[in-house]
Length: 498
Image (cartoon, rainbow, N blue to C red; front, top):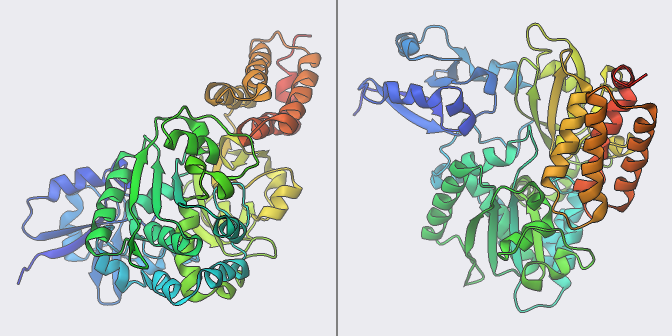
């Protein structure tokens, strides 16, 4: 029997970027160490974080360097994992396994409740599965927040020789990473959610469209698919259900479901006009459910615990939990899973730990590069779909980026409009031309040659893009610019030509 001490270290991309890989290399030949590579708990400000078993659970050491090994082996200086406030104050269901299991250990996944949802789905009829989703009030976590059961019902009732399930892993919003964490850290949960969907709608094949910038995630997922296939899990009612990973080519707009389907068919990724919707005529013109990774990963718990359990969490219009991804100038960046309803202020104070040293709060952006900007007066807004919609904002994929007092809001607004101009697929005129004209106006203001007429023109242009763009890229692009002007008008006016 080995006398080596088991140490646990994350193999997540963010943890490796913080030094976990170097740590693993340094200890690779130490006979007194048995190193277990796990998923990350998402407390990235503590990485590299090393854990070992203790009499009352895991103990953790933070921001570890190779020289810390003697202290860890001696048990000196460790902190009980369950006492870390960033983790202890969360309500984790979808991310419950993170930091606990090895990503490709199927037996560990099952030991932690994995596959219970799929087993429950096999005991239910397809209609009963969809009914559980209706009761759960689950809304898609990718940004549109459409009721999931409704899409599944449409796809189920549409007659076709073949149907598809597509997981959207083209997670392109700056400051978001929860899909990547699932792909790298708990891939069987995604596969289980896709299988449940396939059984409900009668699909025969699945795809995961993974962004090119996630090579580790794609490799882990392919390995998980192979293990699931070897375990004969990729079967439904005696028929094979193959799942294939397809890597994108780096286009942001392919995160939009119809552009994704075009790319998946081998075409240029441009947005399709709707209707018909993908649930009616999606991949190769067949009924297709396209949902993001987090949505599929949420489903196994709903089917195993029941829709009423999920509906008991959150707020009236936003049920369940939300995975928030904190970034920017906060002390504690990382993944936070909590029920809907906490305010932005509560999340930033309780989990973000306040501002980074030397920084003063200026603004927060929620929902990626197309999200609205909020000043300090907006921090009491509850994090839920209805409150954000009422405020003219979107939750998007749950990315929260905090900006400090050194941020130039004119430069930031120009950056966001330039992003849309660069990433527009060009299908519709408001987005293709509007984003370029918007960028040019903001560059005039940056250069000190803009006028009040330019601010009025930006406002008119933004309203036109909101109302007439074909998809959310053009429709949402004006929001960060217009909210920057609304809340920080002095900075824009100070740069105008007098």
